[in-house]
Image 1 (spheres, one colour):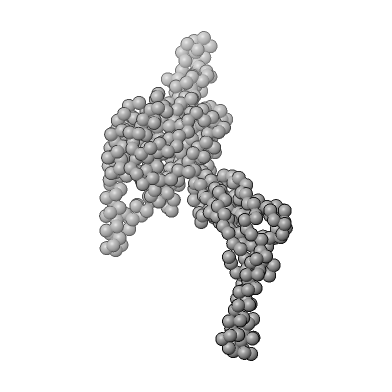
Image 2 (cartoon, rainbow, N blue to C red):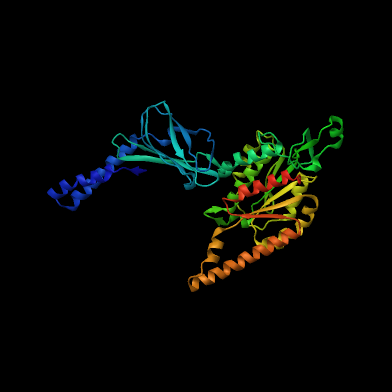
Length: 430
């Protein structure tokens, strides 16, 4: 049951009678009249249970973009329904315009649309649909809430997509498909061509030179059909926020850029996400469906307040890539977490694979270390310097094990990781 703003106005209308005859009986009589009118209005209100409410399927949107959800409401009674309907969602779904005026004749169906703009990645869920049906006088209303399931999936935004064209241009140069052809340093033979000044003499093909009676060089192209395994750490260290963004989301962005670039280069991409258990896995996707499969697998992932079990993830890597591959570990460069859990596993990984560790660094640490204009800032600078020193020690330790470490800010990590992949590709090290 609910009442509208007309009910207090009806009570105030009785002030006229109370002023003319200010007695307790007159007050009670008028309150009784107001209650009776409200109950009578409620009696003639259509029950919300006579409405059939269905939700149309809700699609996927990229985080930060707009979507919508629609309710199909059918009046199963023979009378007109007057009132309001509210389609409630959890706050992170960013619902706007969720309250709709209900004017629905008997036997008709109408669609009510609510705009959504999710503010967090993942599945944003609908709460309840509340119907308030007023009587003919618009004073009293019957109200009921229904559980109408619904969810909108907010996909990773892939903000680093802007870096893809420039990296693809570099890749085309490596493949020799651009107008400015350079000599690739891969190991797969491409073609023969005449020698020009500046070519590496080591690329001269002496047999072809003897046959053609002029100097001929071999050209090479980067290796294709190599395997790249992206391993996303979803343990507690991925929950930290850097520049108001979770580390996990920044690492996803870097993984998507590398996957898009490597798939264009003809390499096979596999994806593993997990902490103590494997939470998501993408294998065997084609070039046309890879990004869609990756963002769908990443969307529901959330940091788990657990320590990462790197032996479990290493087993998943071995099952996915039995032969040599480029393994990219997207995890936080936290000295304690790495030295206690990751280091014992790296020895086996680096034996069979080329390993790159990509980590999101916090630019605030360097700013803190540089500011020493007061006593409090001096203590903060000392703590920051110690943290940076521990990170450098861990990077040096990983380097001795044969692991390449890319430690960069959220904005710089995706292009730096892509550039390192292109460097390995140009040097034939995959």
